[in-house]
Length: 103
Length: 247
Image (tube, rainbow over all chains, first blue to last red; front, side, top):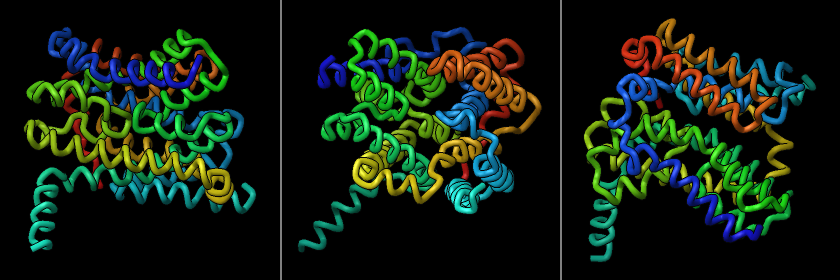
């Protein structure tokens, strides 16, 4: 498949999925329980994203200290309501340090 | 005279920029930049023309969809394969679209048709459940600022990845940035047993299915959480859902 047509398809598909419940089929026409369920989906979305990004291409090293310890630090800082940027930077710094130490 | 005109232009521009959106999305930019670098590295390693790789960043505006597209195109997959894989990779955007629909309901048509382009994980989580963005004008300003800023950061990060990616990946443990970002967003939203159960179920489903169904794992996990909310006690969980993102 050539590059430009496939890029057009990619852009179109991505755009259509985004406008699906906003412009094409407004979400207020959905059943109430489903609508409220979807609006309350943030913990489910985030829980899934944490695991998928953690496992991404690195299933065999998931529980190495260089990945687990930084996430414990991140969770602790997030629990203390520290700035989100600091949470991410702290995790990267700790992970980099552990990796340099050979963990 | 020139400085007066310039100040007037800055002032007009300033009215369209939401400082709160910048504060909220800047940490997201820090976290997604490493992913953008990875996409840039992937463009080079797959042998895709840099112009196409770079153009796909602002046009697709989604890391997972972009990686899916680049991988399939480099593997010379057919157009239908690209279409099907992208539908799977983007299925979570449908959930986000539904969750954000109330904010778009009273917006002008141009806004409803064009700016859902900015729907991604990061923009969804900074907006979802927030009552202070219910005013249409405030939301427009916030959404355009956040979406544009994230797009600029993402595009710059992929460009950087094409140039200096391998060196940066060697020096820093950038792969931990994305899970740390989402964990940092998740922890303050665990406000009761219900939200803990929903997040745990989605995480468990993602872990169990990741190696089996590939790109379907994410939407499957999200849908399992959404289904649990819809079938049990949506009002209670919805009340616990609206925790504001700190910046």
